[in-house]
Image: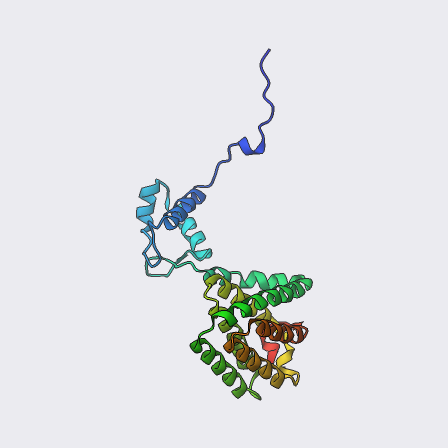
Length: 250
């Protein structure tokens, strides 16, 4: 009697992969191992075709995938080049997805506000421990610049507000923390109207910013955390969904 074989589990099945996927994997490995470094020109299509023994369509599709993921930049008339990968560059590419997430599921705005609150309270504690005189001077300059924008268009006022909070995150000295903080600020400020700034509370915002800087300058960690908590509890309640950044000046 002929032996019968049971159907192989999915993990044992042989799946035929596209040539372009295999080229993509090889190119990613070249970048990961440092064979191709940030700023390096990518090998020509012909060189890649010869190296991997594939046709031009597979190479072009793999290069386009690398470009779409931000690993390389393709410029017409020039050789493609390997990009430097940072926490910021990775998160920058998620902005459109974040916008869809926030617009399609309104409850995610509340989740983002909660996440930002927790994140910023941890950030300001570390900033109050580590801030130098130069850090404090730059924060005071940002508050002064924001005060000078009172009564002007909303957008530069809000952008300076973002810069203030982002600068506090930079004091921590952790590029991932700084990048995540900047991304959260973009998602809140760019895609949702901060009514706080144009609801008659601009002076309150500035006074709170000044007090936060004073506490950071004094290295008062508990005071800085308490002040930031009060600031965020008041301001985050005033974020509301919008159709985009153009509503900010209404």
